[in-house]
Image (cartoon, one colour):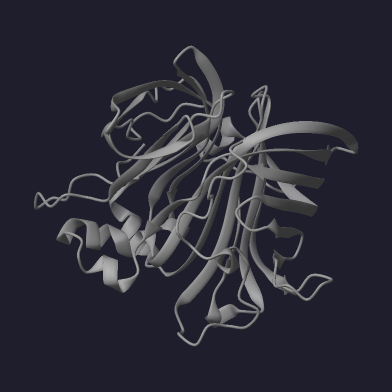
Length: 343
């Protein structure tokens, strides 16, 4: 890690804490989510998150899950009662709801995530066949401390920036959120207990934090989102939408992080969601930046699916991991894709 490097991405240190009271504007939401993968690729905690929204400030939209190499999947989702944002020192460092909590230990440097509850058990093959039986509930606990591995990659869509974007980017920007959103790669250690068996884990992953007005329904066009950090500290990430039907250019922003420097990037080869397979889907990508074209090979693992789900406007959603290869290195990272085509 570059100890003296600015990891804030241009935000203020206090932006990495949380709002102790509802914001004055009804549709401003504050959210945090994480994607964590055991370094071996045998286990993942894909897309755990909490959304604090003024219309339900005391009951927060929450989801968490676990994925195993054999296709076993655990999941939990719903509205959960909020946990106080204030820690023992009175700092609003906590975003919590029900069994899940995130805590900022040091802005843009150190975080913690913990879960203590139950999750419904299923299998990726059942998800693909749409034959879900989630009656079995499994107790799950984890407590993981995380250290940031890259500076924050900030997508700034505050009004003074948003209205300078092209028409296509503005449309997609409403899904990204009118305000700001950050991604940050990280590494961590902790414990996970499933089926009564506790084990220590070393993880890599990504966190997301947002404070914005967001229109979820505009995801209807589909998207592709990938990111990973490699053993030497290099990393990449991007979020892209398809070109609009009228030819307007979409949201397509990312980064390549090499030798302690962030390089703005755009995805030029994108593995859109077309095939619905549990593992082994080719998700190679290419990013264009001032470095030239960066090609990263990828193959999916630890996948979860929600197909034609009415809760997300009938979209097909793939969330999980991928084994990425770049410059002779290999790393497990995240992937999320959606599509509107029928599986």
